[in-house]
Amino acid sequence: MEDIKKIIGINLRYIRYQSGLSQEKFYTKFNMNPKYLACIERGEINMSVEYLYELSKAMKTTMSDLVTYNEKKLINQKRIDAKKK
Image (tube, rainbow, N blue to C red; front, side, top):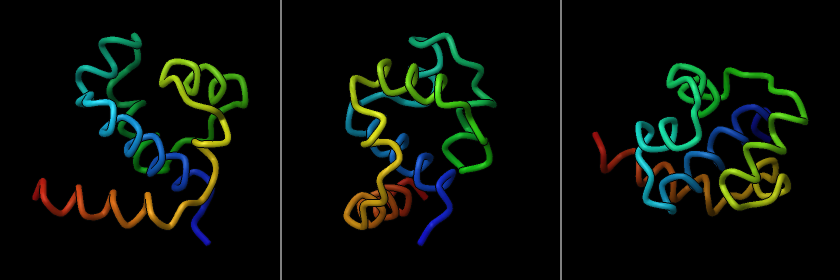
């Protein structure tokens, strides 16, 4: 099982990608520090429940979607990342 921070990062990156938002568009639209966003997506940030809630609202998803391990999302995100390289 993946670390919860990594799961959140994978899910956030997957949802952001599915929404058609680049990291730049995302952090500009939601007034977020770009380094902070990158750290979240890499699973390096332990965020508060309040921040997770705000992030889920901003992404028009649920907190559950951000914290639930989903093998399909993990595989799809790895494919997306591989195509970018």
